Image (cartoon, rainbow, N blue to C red; front, side, top):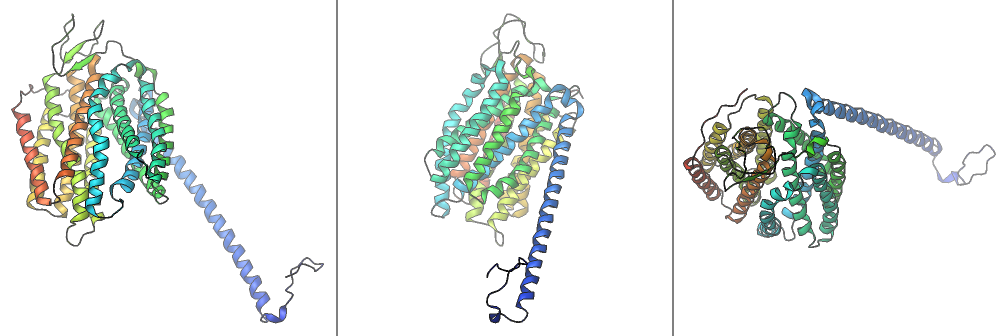
Length: 487
């Protein structure tokens, strides 16, 4: 075609080769294409405006909810925002590892995947099991700089996520130490956050309700982040980890903006699981006044010890159920059911149970911790027995629901017991040690789930036996006097 006409129009140099209506048809198609392009442009513009308005509304609503009921005045709203980004990043890391390490191994056989996951847990969880008990005492030394300690756990995870993204893409052995570092820093964050929460309680709130609101923000963070991480996973697990890096960088900035009172540590001490009180001044159980001088060692109150022992059972069951069912349902799905759907039923049930526990903790004004943890011990064992006797989709969903609900309510009950019965000066150490103990229970449950043969009834009967034996041990131990929380 040539561009020679003085009227600046294109003219076909070989019009004889085209049909009589070719020129008109071509012009019509061009006009249609331009109209379609304009329509697409308008649609994209409208979608962008709608997404911007929706995002602005979501952010405004989230901030209004975070600031409600005195949270803005106490500074809790900043912790809530930071925790949402933290859990969003953790969710992205979990999705990346699940897609790249757990079920997408070379040699698609189930035993290959299982052995690889066992290796991954051995190289990450076992060192973590050794390091975890040391986190609490170590972080106690940084109580005067708790905001920077929290920020460090975020910043280190951002760096390690970037390293892990490259290691997974290149199948480098660096993925194991990087994953271990992310795991340790995640637990260190949980410990430092638990120690910071009591300093940001709004007026009229209990610790249970405060932790419930913080946990609710975490659920929102996961719900928002998981679909985005899923889209990133389409481009590869490395991109999910790069997305997690951005989330942790944002959380690092938010952690530094926490209120200065998070760093206050006047009169703090160390909680000891053994040993006697070492302080010239007597400290009464339930005393909320810090000691006047020096650091102290306070023996763990009997009520806290009871709640902590009882919490180990639902935490163990959570780790066992996650690992055992993940491989069992992949290898031996129920008749007529897809393994993916079955895994969704169990995981969805556990997530729904955890959500119900958070809602209950946020709404209930009065929870009797001792009664709650005792009931959860029996409920977990009974539900596992029912699932072992009647193994089907409904009982699997019920077991997941009860496991999530029990773990959530038991943890809130433990937090309430620590607030009520541990002096304010040593609550930091109490939260640190209790969190690491529960994480070890999860690790043990996960290894039992990995090690058992993939037989549904055998695994469930073993779980029932372990839960029953632990319940007998907890109930046979010296029990605290019944104390009713004040509304």
